[in-house]
Image (tube, rainbow, N blue to C red):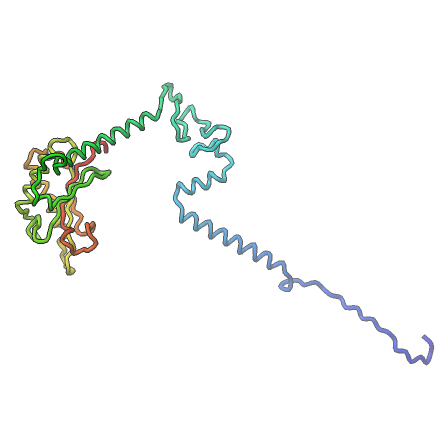
Length: 280
């Protein structure tokens, strides 16, 4: 530079920039996101384990299992074994279809005829119960019950059997109020039903029900009263041709199984006599 020049010297300052480190960087955000995702997956897994049944969990496990075609437990699928398993010679095929296999040296044949025969037996049992119901109510003929008695009777055929429900009416109760003393109409109903049931060999169940009490009592008698009334009716039926060993159970339900929504309604006072199905 020439002496005496008025031009100021140019100074270049170089600043070294250091990349963010520690908490100033962004790598921790990725790690935190992975952690939150893993925790969400963990809680989802815990919820699924608690909200599903054992069969559902088995189905989910089989869905993700690569060995479903030869799964010894669940079977199924359209893989190389066609839904059977590799243990077919030791156990029955578990594909849910009928098959013929060799087991312990004996050939066993399963067919859909077994299911058809079971359906025929079930239908025959239901028809027998309906015949008893028709005979009692006089459908297609003369009823065994009078018009006054019929007011207290409702019948229905269910999976359990033929249920004959005897219930109270306003001003016409089956038992003296609050007691187990049967009225004449109850004795006559028990006699007729007992003689009708004697024509079959099915077992019989008797269940007692009563209405709720309007006030809370320290010693609430509803359990004892419903059970004792059922036992009284059983005793009345045993005085007919109905054998005592035919009774499978005598149960009291107190006021827990209502016939109508109103817990205090007299309609909840009832006795259910069940002619149980013979195929059960």
